[in-house]
Length: 181
Image 1 (cartoon, rainbow, N blue to C red):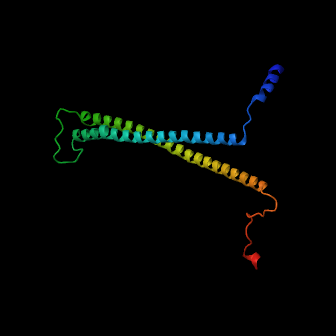
Image 2: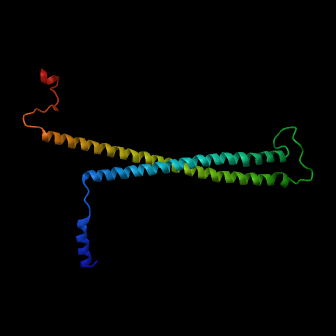
Image 3: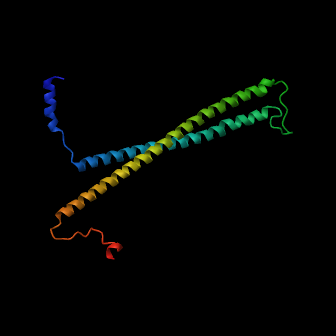
């Protein structure tokens, strides 16, 4: 950086606004509020996505897995174990009766497991986001309490400094039982 650039930058530094302590506290509390609000929406979105994923899994199971399992039981001779089952077609091969439906059934179950894994992942994200939200909310609340206590302490100092001479301090604790003896 050239000397002329540096001197121009240093001269421009005087124009930077200086924040009062109250403005700094307001800025920090405002930032905390924005973070909590954003994280709340993110956690709610993850929980909603988890709910939709689980509902989708239940729908998929009801629409895809159960009919395939019923077809497999109907088409496989003796698979259901009920005596009134119709006999298999005489011209159907063993592969047609068992392997085809099994492959379809395994494919549907694999698809369901992928969705289940995604649901568990989204559930984990929702849980972690909620934990971070609780932690961030706790920190923001403690920061607000600290600011309020500092404000009260400052007000007490100002009241104590403004008290006229000769007025007794009533904030001192009364003598305890040992002092009265």
